[in-house]
Length: 277
Length: 255
Image (cartoon, rainbow over all chains, first blue to last red; front, side, top):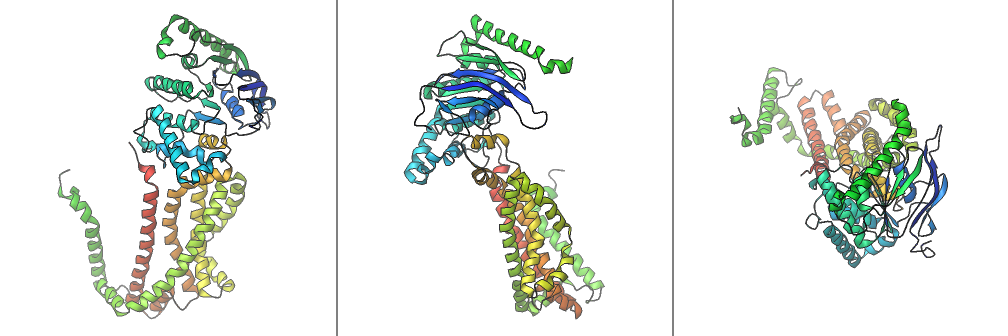
């Protein structure tokens, strides 16, 4: 499947819909279509409970779509594939492993790495790679610490490294910084941005934070209330490379404001509004 | 009151010894006040142990082997079954009621019936030890294996990990401290099983020894056997308590 894939095609969603099975199955996603060019960064925003996380499960192959299809580099996503890396709001590190051993976990699972880990040289090589990743996120001195000894922000950095150690072509992040305080969050925006600029993976970021989406992504996909449809796809007014100061420039402020208005309208229209009426 | 002598460090270290001495003193006192066949004194019990040390040791070992074998089998069967229950809701739902039923059965009631199936006293003791400590092992492994963080599972599943890989990398290490905690309790239960079996049908082992001592009104000898039994049980308990603490170190670590 990898051989006939087109390494320039990126990620493509074509009329993807999802209804959870069972009685009165929840119609989560209606008909979502968008493309993420190879190596690009797309953010997905929308009202709470609109199905953003479900969408990520489809992209990662954890759930099959009810209708439509997802393609990664031209190949149909039919199930979990080790070309994807995932990160969530909860860093979910294994508490009995050190930071670096947590980062190495995916290599013990992914087939093409597993055999390499059996030799001493292979182990050393990948340990060095993990160490390099930890250095990139500023954790070179914390490699041997356990999760309990790390702060929330540090754990999330480890989680990012773990999502990238197997060199996935797509990184999927679901509210990765949602539980962090404002300063740590801004710090991690920089970390993620640097990682992405360095490794040039295709990145899909689901977030509630409109400033986060606007600062990091090349395109922002705005979803409606459930069942989710695409309301619009917006392009932030700044080109890459970016820095956090850009958030305070008038055109960026106006852009974030525009996103907020759209989502406000979506919520006023949706089932949440009906329930509270 | 913080500086009082009772809170001093050396006093706290000494307190178990102090309490033990007080306990032995009270026992000795009570022993003096009652006839020996009702309650022997500490000294009389000690003398009984010195009288027949090798006999007590022999029967102590007779009791130890079936306990350890039954316990070992319960570990293997319990961990495998607990993991499969933790991994599959179907197995969990199906097996749980049966386990509850067998656990609810008083094991003392089973022994006289099992005698018919296992006329060999050794086999009976192994079975009783197994039956009595199997349940707490299964339940502890099953519950801790069932509580795998959803997102952790997604991270691994997205990489193509199957159920067994997730069990091996996440569920099992996560359950390890709970498993040792369960074993710590189960090993003392296993002795109950063996003793019940030996009192039912045997002519060796501490259970049998105590029954005979009691029948002959040799209470001090019975107490001596109890002490041997207690020492065996505590040593095994301590081994698993140490293993639990070692494997659970990560659970207590904090910044």
